[in-house]
Image (tube, rainbow, N blue to C red; front, side, top):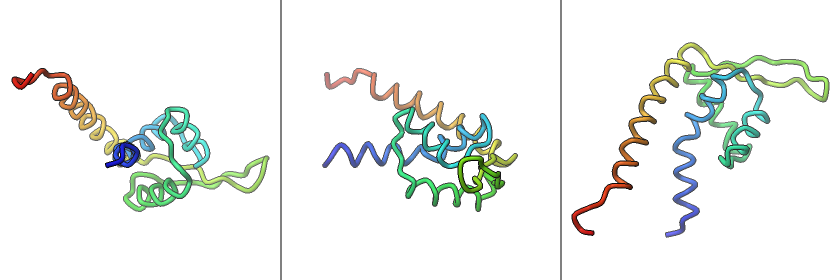
Length: 113
């Protein structure tokens, strides 16, 4: 088993949560979202993020608007919806519970030691 595959699956599992959390702080276009993820060492390629953004939009968690750009074609800015904000709040609770559980399991001494 290769560690890189497992690491990629772990990142993939929290990517929706990360994108929604980024957009909670303000509207952003795809390149800005990718830059924010990469700055936090969440390495994602454009081929991964576009279908995910579409899925989140189709689920009613995001919407978007087009905005003219001074440095090229218009940009599609993604906006978190009210449902998206509520969904993200639920994910925050779930994430905190998961982190607590994983920390308890991975730091606990077992009877086998």
